[in-house]
Amino acid sequence: MTMAPIPAVALTPVAYFPENYFLENLVVRADGSVLVTTVLQKELWYVPSAKPGTVVSPVLLHTFKHPILGIVEAEPDVIMVSVCDLYHTHESQLARIDFKGWTPGKPVKPEIIFSFDDRARGLNGSCMLGPGVMALADCFAGLIWRVDLSDGAHSATARVWLAHDTMAWDPDAAVAPPPQPGVNGIRYSEKTGYVYYTSTAQKVFMRISVGKASLDPVGDPRIRRRDRQLRRLLHRRGRRIRLRLPAPRQHARPGPAPARARRRSPAHRRRPVRPGHGRAD
Image (tube, rainbow, N blue to C red):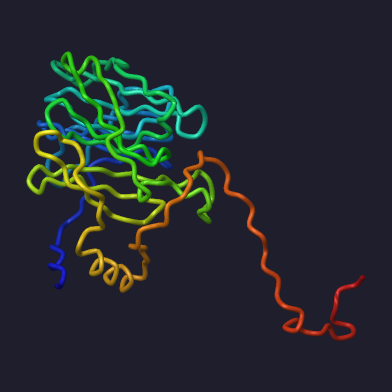
């Protein structure tokens, strides 16, 4: 089965952020404006609705104590933001921001409605599974949380929705710090009945069936069927993606990768040093 042709699209700038900003996630509101989280700067930004071909100026709304990553609209104009100290204490919280009646220029007042226990390690992407029910990826715990909102999203409870080896981060990855996240982006499609998620460290794009009534996972996660075509496409474009499931591993906590032993060439492969060309002893 061949991949459908990629449609031609025109990309145009909407807004420009300060240099070296790390834009993480976004929510598009009903009026066309956009809320954007910046993970390293720990900030929430507002981008006004822009007419085609025009550029608008983003507005800083709030600076948090810890990095913010996931953002989702739980109900019209009620925004939930994931706040997490990813690389130190791993303190993890869910904040509610009410935009009902808000107008640009007014301050916003985040309200912490839930604090996760010490199983939470790195809150990342989030989505809604149904009214009042969130799914929240934890990229360093290697799992997805289910968060049930109540009292107009002023309070919440949380439990582990699913944990799987494909969600794990990789402490042995040969990349410079900070550690690469495991389960990262997450979206639910009511039409297909699946939750889709990416895992950066494991380099996989997965899906898991969701029960219509329970909104809990059904069966095991599976790699999407057309990943073989995707892999060939990425190879043709000079990129690589690993699509086999990783072997089960013990989930260590984020930290510096261990030093790797340097391989030495066998003695019989070494070239003799000629007189006058070697180094002085």
